Picture 1 (cartoon, rainbow, N blue to C red):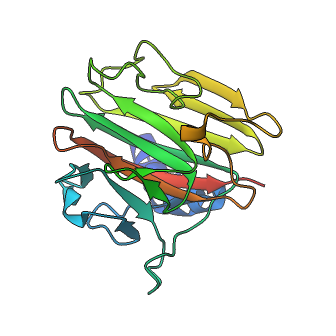
Picture 2 (tube, helix red, strand yellow):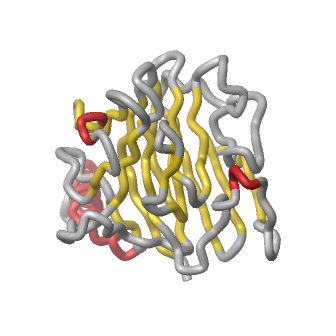
Length: 226
């Protein structure tokens, strides 16, 4: 490269970086869960019209009761199939309309209860721009609750959820909001008895909370941990 002018070298090196960036990301072990075009790899447990892709983002807007969008991977024929993740880092970028409620479930499954079809098992990472709901964005819902939101939910912000064995950490906008280790033989109130990690791992599901709430998700990716 000694005969290439400095500006040309910079352009050439930048081109190489762009060329090999996808391979570098793959080498890091990250898996993209959303293709930015459609809902391939995802399936709703109810009211599938609650979900759409708008301007390269997943739009969550419940049309009746709550709906949850499960990551199912290659799309097996069995409607009860979903991909299980045990230890992982999950990252996504999200924002909500004003006065909106949503969430992301981990280590969950298709079991749901009540008229609102709330998921019975696993943990919920709260997303909330409402005044009514006192558990704010970044909470590990009903386990470690925040009284104040760390972000303005109407603007895009990043969330990272890490599960390693019995430890769950949540980062919102680069700030750690939860660092929780599930106790052995954890006991929950009867209404929350399924709020625990599954030794076999569980599903990842996005939540469309209610007809008045709208949230958007993009850049959803995961890296499994040993």
